[in-house]
Image 1 (cartoon, rainbow, N blue to C red):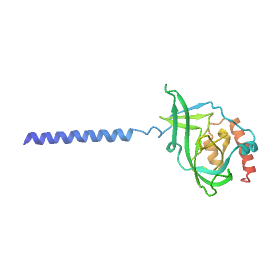
Image 2 (cartoon, one colour; image 1 turned 90 degrees about the horizontal axis):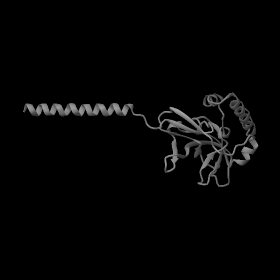
Image 3 (tube, one colour; image 1 turned 180 degrees about the vertical axis):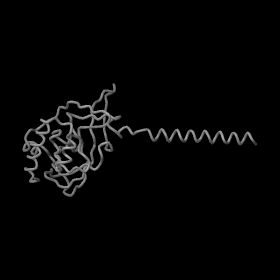
Image 4 (cartoon, rainbow, N blue to C red; image 1 turned 90 degrees about the vertical axis):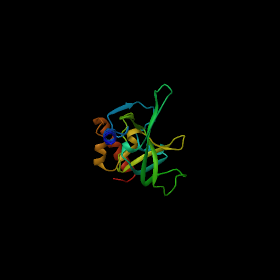
Length: 200
């Protein structure tokens, strides 16, 4: 009888140790995309425009909208070759559309949500970005220039000069990594976009 009580006590103690260890592990474990520890910018071979009118003519879809999720919570896609070398990366970003400024004929008149592709992604705490692209910020209403790819998905074009925040405070916070020259170029381009679409 004593042996059974000791065995039961030992089993209960072991179970408690295992449960405590599991809870500690789970509480300390972070999801692969839960934080950004490192940023790697890679060169991309993309078409860029230095004039708003040319960008607006080239874009198939121009909307005022905002990302609905935090960057770390979005669908990050990274593909690799057989040898493990990175092949491509992007993020599928869900946006809410508040206004359509330009659209192709086949774009639904009353569409209010869209998943777009951004040239940035997150893998194991490292953010990979094309040409220092800074992702759309959650709830930051912006003018977004888009083009449909060969798979029928809309992707943001013109890198950092393909989206322009309508809220100056949010815009400055998201562009902290820009050089003074890049900030100046962005500001000039942004003012031209606001003027073109009568948003100032």
